[in-house]
Image (cartoon, rainbow, N blue to C red; front, side):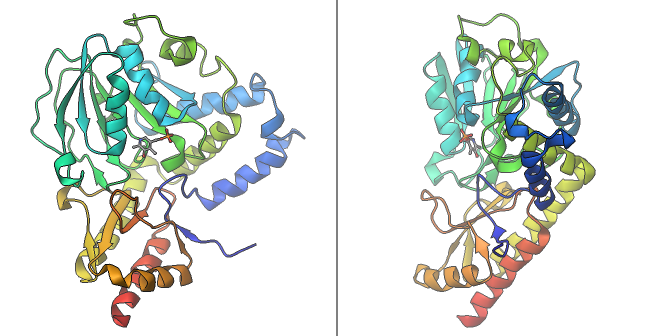
Length: 356
Ligand SMILES: *Cc1c(COP(=O)(O)O)cnc(C)c1O
C-alpha cells in the first residue's frame, strides 16, 4: 500500500483510520453474517439496528433528548436540505444570514417558496467575516444560518438570540464543538465533511416542528414521512449510514464532542499561530471569526507558490489548495485529523521560511 497521506481535503474528507479498517471489514463480512453490509436488506434486523444506533448516537452526542428531537439519515446532500427546509416550513417569509457560498445557495432555493429576508451578509468583504448585531424579525417563519463556512474558513461563535425557530446548516462542523444544540429546531449536515462518507445527510429536527405543512409536499421531500418511517421510507444509503455509525462510535469512544473540541482547539491554535507568526503567510478570515475546521490562508508572495506546493507534496500533504473563490490554501482539520498531521504542515511552513 502507498504511504498514507496527511489529508487536508475539505470534503469528502479524512475519516479515522480505525473507522476505515472496520468499514472495510464490514464490506466483506458484516457482523460475522457471511454477508457484506452492501448486500443485505435494509429491512433486515441487522441493518435496522445500524440505523437505530446511528440515530440514537447522533442525538446523544449532541446532548439532545430523543423524545424531543428526531435524527434522520436522508439522501440528496445538504443541497437537498436547502430545498426541503423552505418546502416544509416557509409559509410567508424567512430570515437568512448570508455568510458564504452555501448560505447563498440556501437563499436561492428558499426564494422559490416565499419571501426571503437576508438579515445580513458579509459578501461586501468576500465573506471573510461573520456579520453581527443584525435584527431577525419576529414574524419570520424561521431563521437560517450556516454555522461553519467551509470555503471561507469562518465560523459562527455566538448565535443570535431570537424567538423564531433556528435552522442551521452544520455540514462542516457538526460534532466538532459543544453548543447548546437545544437552541436549534432543525440541523442538517452532509456526512462527508465531519461524519462519514458522502451519500447521506444527517437531519436533526425538533418533533414540535412536524405539524401542518404550508403546502402539499412530495413524499421524498417531506420530513414527516421520513420521520414516521424512521429514515426507511425508501432504501437508505446503507453503506454511508453504516460508516457514519462507525465514526460516531469512534467519537463517542474518544469522549464525545467536548473531548474532541479540546483537540480541535489545540490543532487550530497551533496552525493559526504559525500562520500569524510566519511572515510568508497571511490568514484570510477575520480573526475573531476563524473556523476551527477550515483554516484559510494565502502566501504573502504568490510567486513562491510552486516552492511551497513542492514542500507540501514531499511531506505527503494532500488537499490543501484553497477554493477558487478565496485562492491560496485551505487546511481542513476536521475531527478525524490527528494533531500530528497538523504539526507536519506547520513544520513544512517553517521549512518554507528557512528556505526563503
Ligand atoms: C459541502 C457543503 C454543502 C453541500 O453539501 P452537499 O452534500 O454536497 O450537498 C452545504 N453546506 C456546507 C456548509 C458545506 O460545507
